[in-house]
Length: 465
Image (cartoon, rainbow, N blue to C red; front, top):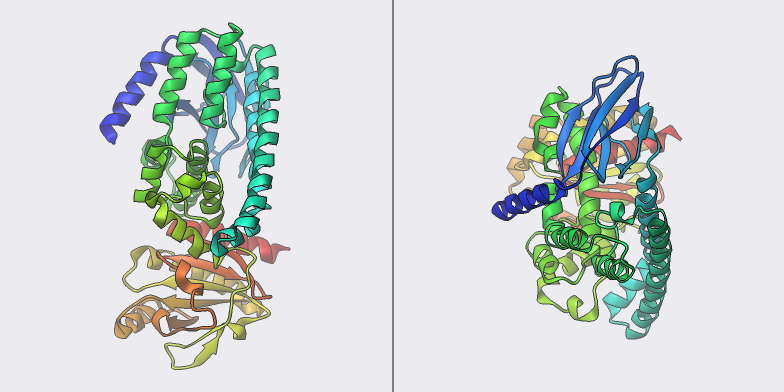
């Protein structure tokens, strides 16, 4: 994998060296937080440069255009902006935590964001079809499946017409060369747009075709996950920002959230390609139910039957049982103190289900964060935590509770008696956190230690209302 990546990056660098010019970005900022500028280069965020401000202004020289940028702070990333050919771009920092910017002169970026808005509307439209889609899938209901397909086709037709309108506007503004390759558009449609430009003699055919072919070869979901965010996740940026442990964890959480979304888009934009199917069969980076079903909805009937996707389909079916908005059925168990309890005992308050184990390092690493939430909100009488351990050995479980001095109730996963036998099937990895509302419905279901930040922010927001 890495040898292929090195070849691809070198090829990208050789190609883009043809687009050399001297332009600059002016950044206005009067705050005290350190800022960096990050370039999307060779289809990766592989360049992070600290900004030096004098009298509230920093100037960043752009050696090659078109190019995509974003600013970086300890709190995360700004929205994207572009510098196209012959553009003078000015950035004003509106807010540093979270990082928000105001952009002027980003003419190419207007079209980049318009393409993205179209896709956002399409994703929102798909969300409205999820319940019917899953009902048809789980019950093998061909009639309902046919109705859902018609609605999906209608959404896709609407999306494509909107894409072509923006395409034409970008052509007329002479900015299509800047945005065609990097914009979030299905790969097959990009090639059709290229063919249209070729017929109209609107582009330097050889250069754009080479870049498009390189994009098709490079920008796979596997590349996104392994390379696209690599410098921001594990490279020099974390070290040179001088973050403490909490800041590093929060930054990584924000980055992973962006990475998972980019992975999802890359998968959807070439959903049925063999390379994507093989990648998703070996390692599922689509962790959330919305991403799993959103990708599944992009597959044709032949791809859905492919044995490569069996594990992904099973994961989608499992996470459907504990998706946001569903009523979490009651279960009963005996605590570590031999007290009989049920989930129904927590009705009327928020309860955080913490699926963990004494042998799970990441599970124990986030316990201080969970304790912080417990100490902060438990006294209100409206919040509690229930630990559900997947330990196989009872003694190890009890020792773990004692070592961590856990104040909330704990039960063993293996001893839980479920009203719905399938309800815990979605708990396939640790740690997993499920937030249940006062009405017994799931508010948030996340997996992975980095997701404690999202869970904490969600709970804080609920109690801030």
